[in-house]
Length: 251
Ligand code: SF4
Image: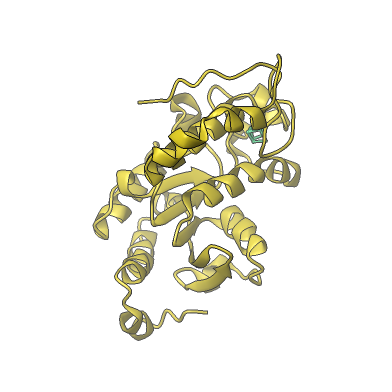
């Protein structure tokens, strides 16, 4: 059930620093308002859920780029707050904008069956996008929109602390590769490869994948996606040998 934390008005978003709605107080104050003792008593999952909920409220009021004026709903993300695997797509489409949920159209059905193929479901992973609002007519995200919106994605990564990040499509790959200083290549050359990066909070495996929509337009791509998803399963099973035998080297 959604947390119904009431927010002070005129707050600044702690992620972007921007004023996101009218009234008194700041987003920082909202976070600090939670009694420390109570926070300590919460389980890690509950703590993360609260942080994600606060982030959602921040995104819902965001007007940092022109896309806010056209959205029906923000699409922040959904899934487990303690997910080992985080999947990042590009931006909401028509159905996602209507429902406020990521990957609910045809590409979402493809994603569901890909997850199912490796024994996972939506509830066990976290799914989100680079942009939280739909670009008109599903056009490509602009540099400005990506720059304004990705602090929210950074915050999601920092809250969830995934062990594996799977990028879905070009824009997601480009942003995550830049964030972790990985040289950018063509997705056609590196899909299904594994990149291991070290962060202050431990290692993260990054797996660039095609966007599931490719299989909507070209059914033959489903085999490629199915094969690439097996790599995620191998990482989850800590099966380095199978990874090497699958010719998917860890870079
Ligand atoms: S796309 Fe991102 S930055 Fe732009 S208005 Fe929506 S939430 Fe804000």
